[in-house]
Image (tube, rainbow, N blue to C red; front, side, top):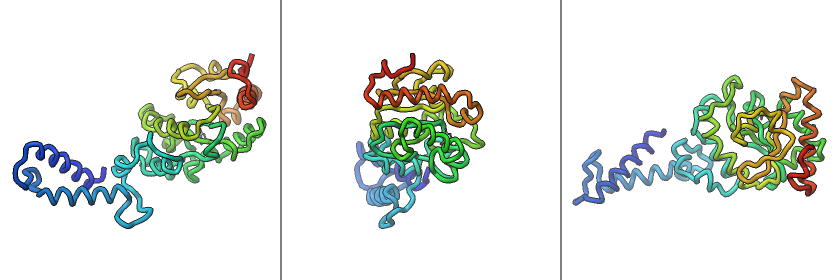
Length: 263
Ligand code: URA
């Protein structure tokens, strides 16, 4: 937390509390006058907006907390800026770059993976390593060029050494994914891998039990399938993955959820 902002907030609280009963101009706490409180609040406000007259100045994590709320971000750019200055969990300390997500803002399909890996952390882009190239090919198999969909992850920062995301990291990042979905309003979400599927569907079920049908997350249809990285290790899962993607294709072609699913 940025100390001057914290100080200004505490002072503001004291100011408001004392104003309820205060007489005279001087505030007892910190021996500040009302003018001093107003000056420090104004200075904290400028810092929260990126610095007085300094376009593009980096906002502090504390400033981000006082900026537009995640759920109220009016567009993806604003939301990405919130992710860039986010400190809701400790992963911002070890990451090289936030990986917000990329693609068409009006995409019919949103692909959700687990978390950025090393290559994604380097570049700030989702699914750009070997698994990403396979993802591109899988999407093309149902007539969806990468640029036509939106690609993101449950976590927007890489966990150190690609360890499993922690529950508190997932909880901290979830509002960003929810807002991304609310802004894009996809027709279908594809959850790639057990982690994304279990997180979105709030279940501990094995991916093998979740795939092959249509679920829902926050009102959006979800098709769960194998992660491209898992396919690289187990090419035998390519066929079921392709079948899952056919469900997506059928849904985009206007076939209802029930008819689109396998079997
Ligand atoms: N694996 C993921 O789940 N996401 C990425 O962005 C890259 C690899």
